[in-house]
Length: 397
Ligand SMILES: O=C(O)C1=C[C@@H](OP(=O)(O)O)[C@@H](O)[C@H](O)C1
Ligand SMILES: C=C(OP(=O)(O)O)C(=O)O
Image 1: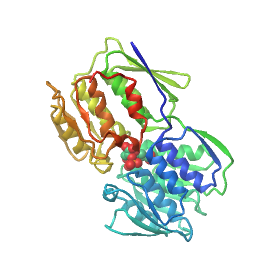
Image 2: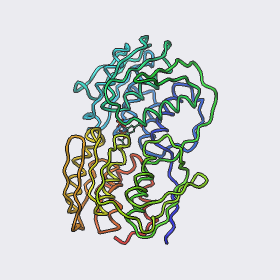
Image 3: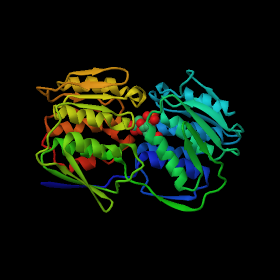
Image 4: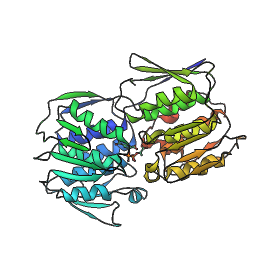
């Protein structure tokens, strides 16, 4: 058995929330184990810059959280822009909500999309209705600035709530910091909070990054993989990877002293097919889809409506690349179905479409057959140490 030790850096989602909160509360929170992701670095750089032009490249959370943040920076003008793809990722629902609260924001190119011109001012309204069907990041953005509005903020969520655990994460972090929040039925209330006590926040490592090691464990023969600083009780949506890989792919997880140890369950009885709703954990949909393909288990994943507006259209990208490897894939606007594959096609180039998760999710297939990953550097968006960690597996191909 080959034992592998991995030290992941902190969750990018938790880090980016805390970076905004630190900017709002004069750095009262001491952050430990922050994310080394490019998205967190971009957030940090933006928050420590006084420039008018802020470019957050591909970082979705930075785009959404900073739109809200700059809206309340009194008398400051900001041009908030991003990569070509960021200019295709919708932001209208958040911008309209901020405008209704009194914010001065306008679109500089296409209506509903970045770049934005934001003229910061005090916001006085304290109630807003917002659709929660497109991105939970819009709701988080409002919750974060709600703490600074003199009358607090009541956010009424309309429609299905997508990526729900991310909203829970936000509310939980605010509560841990001593901010009063309430979530009853479909209404979130955030209390105005003038000051925070000086605190220390130890950020759990990133479960989304851990997912690629689950996939390697499932497709490999005999790995024992130790990942540091991950817990049974986690705020992260992608903590769900543990349950999915136990139930469907025969990977067991032991939680011991802040470390998880992954190994294969002996004589695991694989399911004949898998049906999963992944609306709660969209970022691991690619990992799970590729593992099922590698294990030749037919899979039907639903609840994927947000995948079209992420770093790339992830449903299309998955279909194209899995089909290049010999799979048969059907997609709709919110689902993906892969039939069992008889023969893998090897030695193809996997395109990554500027999407870190396309690169990382296909790598475990290298345990089964040779393939190449194009533009491998894309991983830096969330997991810059990925290739260093992968070297530890001594891949045959
Ligand atoms: O709030 C967050 O940290 C995130 C929320 C999710 O986005 P959506 O709510 O847009 O699905 C997730 O996909 C993203 O990677 C991070
Ligand atoms: C979707 C993601 O990030 P974001 O929306 O923050 O760009 C991701 O990391 O998979």
